[in-house]
Length: 326
Ligand SMILES: NC(=O)c1ccc[n+]([C@@H]2O[C@H](COP(=O)([O-])OP(=O)(O)OC[C@H]3O[C@@H](n4cnc5c(N)ncnc54)[C@H](OP(=O)(O)O)[C@@H]3O)[C@@H](O)[C@H]2O)c1
Image (tube, rainbow, N blue to C red; front, side):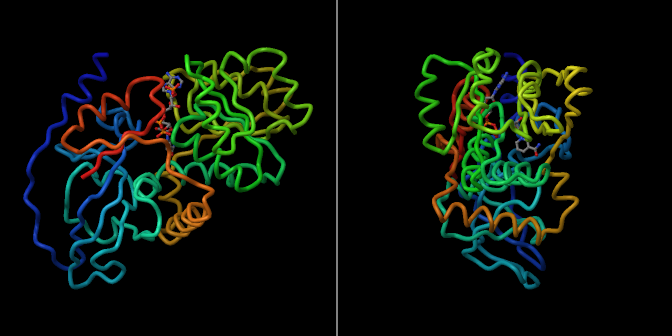
């Protein structure tokens, strides 16, 4: 676990001077910020976006506006804000940010939902609607279904009346996890091993073959997702948790004309305006208010115990998002 240890070892709690609040500045008190795999990848130096060093860790989270500069028009003291894009450095108690780096969000949603709203549910929603034109009753297959993204996929798909086939890694308490995902709206929960056995095909007597597969893992797991896709279907890769390449069978590509695509929310944000991002956030807040989208299973950890949170976030089978509280 050398890589893991070093990812934690390079982090330190430091006192930084706050700059004066002027012009377009916004003084924010951070409330809560999750530890996501991309935060760890960024610290390890193998993410698509790397900050100048030294840097403050954390790409996601929610804060409350304390004061604003004279030219700030969209935010006022008391508002809740989340980062407009990755790289803001959210693992801190307070900071002075520029207005355009923040998005105001409604305050009538639970704090854990707000802290985890800006990355995983956005990714889940975009992948469900942007790649295939799915209709109610259509099915979607995904792996790492207990991940933050996976839990959002289950819930948003259920709200859109799509059926989900959810693959997870086997574990001693698999029934507990299966029940939890079914409570979120999962139609089928299978282990990676179950997905490989021929009987799994029986599911598709009652269900159309999925036209969309969401791949968070890579390696053999993604090869299996492809085997179950409908002809002409699309597999969207958005994570590589197994650190193994996607291997696609030549015959499946030729005879089923499957499409392999990728998704990166940071790129989606670059290609879309901040108003479009805000609209996406408001759509997700509607799901939250209607009880259709809850925060992922979480463990709250005080910021000063960040080492414990980071270590827990890198352990397998934890099934709980670590959220730093300030
Ligand atoms: N492309 C994008 O825009 C985008 C946006 C958001 C997230 N992501 C990516 O999506 C992935 C999930 O993020 P998250 O925040 O949802 O994660 P998370 O809540 O921390 O969950 C991690 C998931 O990965 C699984 N996992 C860990 N190691 C694995 C391995 N070796 N093989 C198979 N599965 C493994 C875990 O399953 P167990 O319970 O079995 O350990 C768990 O389901 C990350 O790679 C993240 O970078 C990408």
